[in-house]
Length: 130
Image (cartoon, rainbow, N blue to C red; front, side, top):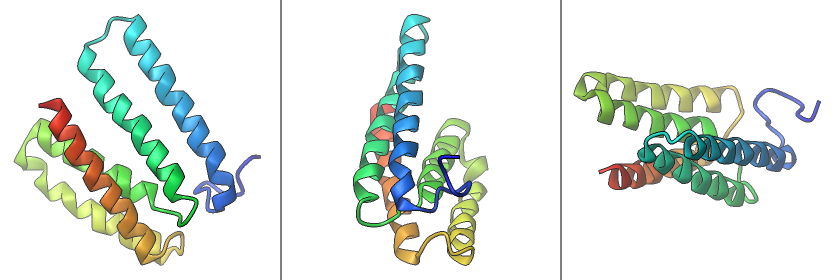
């Protein structure tokens, strides 16, 4: 296959992954537009495109943890949508970060970078969705 493992551990293989993700998001945007879905669905899709681009640029230097970044955004959105009852789900972020480091898929710096990207895009989504 194109990737040597499920986590796409080799940085040289990640550009194809980012390209595939970009194509999927653009297809999603086209689908939302063509089917006259609610327009606020475009905001997370557009922010996803920007995030993919940021990850792709950062990936040239370090292999930032997409797992931690996406989970950070996902947990933030769950709490925003469903309320503070889901606040305990925040514990998932350090658990996944620890697992990524323990499994030697990422360094501490890569996990922290992924988390920071997740926080920045969570703030951007909160701002844009209000």
